[in-house]
Image 1 (tube, helix red, strand yellow):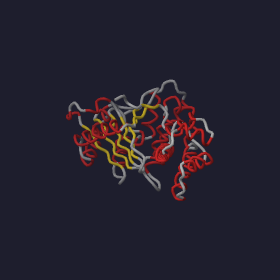
Image 2 (cartoon, rainbow, N blue to C red; image 1 turned 60 degrees about the vertical axis):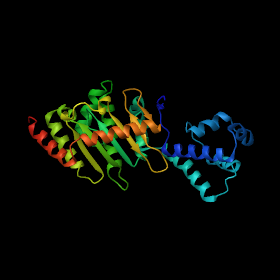
Image 3 (tube, rainbow, N blue to C red; image 1 turned 90 degrees about the vertical axis):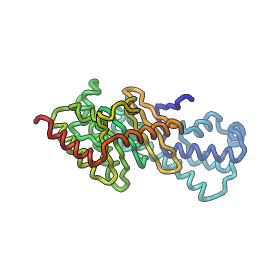
Image 4 (cartoon, one colour; image 1 turned 45 degrees about the vertical axis):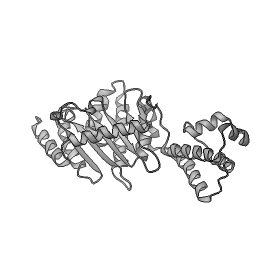
Length: 293
């Protein structure tokens, strides 16, 4: 079966709304054509609402609920709340950085991460963005995106730091489980001093109750993570998980059940082969001491 890949993900609330509206229409026994004729709305627009490709308004949703004979007040309110939540999620804190975020679809990922409850992140070469120090992040961004001006690099660094404040602390912090290949430690980014600071930060972050960090040693040999980095995002029920694959110009997400299960299984294999969190902290400290001043 072909992978289902999309470049710009819908908000979590829009995905829920699309699924609920489609279920209600099917339960009513109506086709899209019949609904289009009854409420006098373009069939193509209705189809895109049901797939989550476009948002909608409370007025149109009320008309749809009337058409589907939905009279349950609580159900109607729940669905209308999804419409409003989707609208609010289109006004994120990172919108002011849209110029530098858009080229890599990074803003799409931020929208998903902002609504997620848990992340399972495998990184074979770099410290995950949520765990990077400011100096490490600046060195990574400047080298990986040489076309950016210093001001643009600074803007992306600020985004990364605000992400950390938003997601790793606060009232509803995300549960982050990160598996890092040993290559992450051995590749010197910035300078030995930057790396020592980064290792210390990883040790400190791993002490947070919502953060688990494991190191996958070279001695593990070949493993399924050699295909590349990935993130499995978990959301509040009933929204299904997603897999995010980041590329320079066309990052994508996968949402089929088979893809999600495949990457979940891979992550389970990786963390089973990795050092325990306690062993990881010891290894991080030892590696920092080995770096020349």
